[in-house]
Image 1: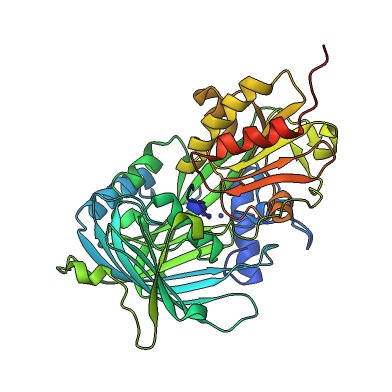
Image 2: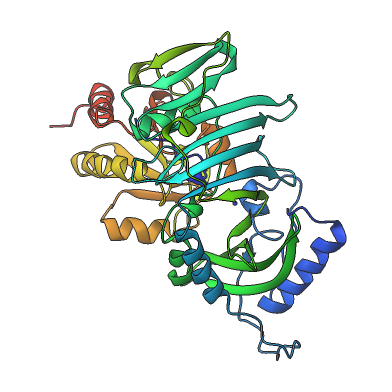
Length: 452
């Protein structure tokens, strides 16, 4: 199966409200309003996660102010700093650091706090949550309203190992497949963790060359380390609806030019570097089995589909906008079979699924079958442009927190087939080669015969 990029994330993510006092938040808002010449909206308690993103909320961009800068001292060039950070990261072969991921504000989806210590080594290996790396992570995960739980996992390039306390066992994925790792992570609610930029070449170069607006926000100490603060103003939207700005804040060490913190809206990830380039052996990337615990081999057939909606339930209605700004709802398609695909531009398994969905669209576009991709809330790319580039011609809706919550699509890809009566006929998480044929079988079984 595909690795659900949890925002993620994302991947995950991927995958973005800050840890500031009320007065600091207002000061930041005031500063940004002057910089961008807009009035920041103020989120109500009922607004979704996507509306809480950024230094305060998502902003709609207007014409910039032409007022002269008040600071006579020129600020450092943020693009140059990011390129220097990229070069500094390329010198890392091994690194040990602590990673603390927490969330601020009133997020609609309960999210856990992750506190781990990582050993990470640059390696040409398949991606297993962290790309281009072998690693061991030990620490804790604290789910909302719960006590901290021990978190131990590792990947040595061949085996992914995960300590499952409830079973008193170490789960070992054999044979190893990257998509199964993410699927296991999604089913076990293991969030994304770590800084892949330490061992993944070109990450900062892509940011610097990606056409986003970069601004230098000043300096700030992170755990005693003076850092440059750089805002990457990621643009999302279209010409009709206006452009939405997601300022991601990178905190780059002034002396060593290595990242110490990333803020994406309400998500805050902080690292404390312990040591760099200490020689490590293969044993350093194998999670040990504690005394009194066993080991269990996990195959693809053992992996659950997580807690996504079960077959047979009524599919919740959603109201989403297409890239042209028009509003659509699931009820608009009552009487037709609807295939929903929750995806993101940064999710490799999602793209594999999308080629299969395009083939289904080509086959059934003149029948009562509708294929709809729903882009992930945390997707800071350009979903419409991505689909156009890849020549995917089926429908696209821009996702929101409500749709993600209703369909439990906290990892991507997640696919549902909804019958003409509005009930779930099929559901799946991740990418599997067999999934396309399964979906086709479900469609054929439930599709009304063509009129002669």
